[in-house]
Image 1 (spheres, rainbow, N blue to C red):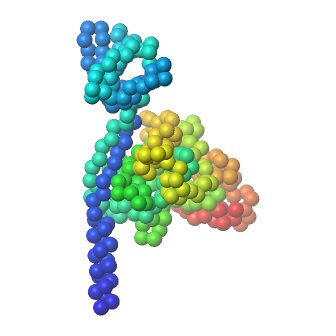
Image 2: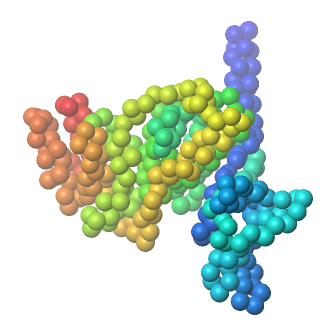
Image 3: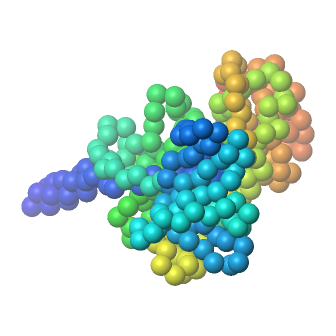
Length: 323
């Protein structure tokens, strides 16, 4: 009887795991960088985008907005409200806010690789809010074991998951088979935290021999989670009419971690990033400099011995125990 009950329970868990989940993708539309593909004489126009045009007199108009340039200078907009079409000159406009493009699709959630399925976890927004739910890694061919570009997060109590491209979260955690993996926002993706403590250790996906590339590492990855707000606490502060998904997407878009992308950098050398969470700095180590750098970090700790390139993780863990 016990065996039968265990089997039924296991099958029910597997069935839940295999259920498809609605995956929501939100892409912001920047009014300053949209294309003007349509041409008529010396005037070009954009595609129509849903949005809001705010006027200098304090009023606003919502609808499908088409922007026009005359001789490459912004001149006017046309707003189709559904009831009327109104043209507004540039000098009357205070601001134009275009709605993000929202796409939804069904996510299979039955992959052989467990990290690609929704597992218990959390995300930390740039606002500092920590939301609890389930996390799936949206892995692609360009991803590594230690570096990924995109994830999906299903908030507790929600039936729709939101996608977060690299750099839009401070960090996320995903629990697989009872083990929690923590990933930090880095450049245009997320790096796996191999060792944790005062000193955090990660592989560098953008390794290079010149150290100027490492100055682009954001301070966000050196910050510990000071706030421990739950999804319920975050939800209680939502604006009227906003769902948890909308609120966290807006928070992520409004204060995106990525302000620059480390473009054109080759992965030509295995390299590690050591984050000192106390001094708020990052050190990049490779086979050429690891002994010098690790010995410098280990000065306050006696008896750690000589660091080994093949046992850097073990050395960092000993270093954290010493601290």
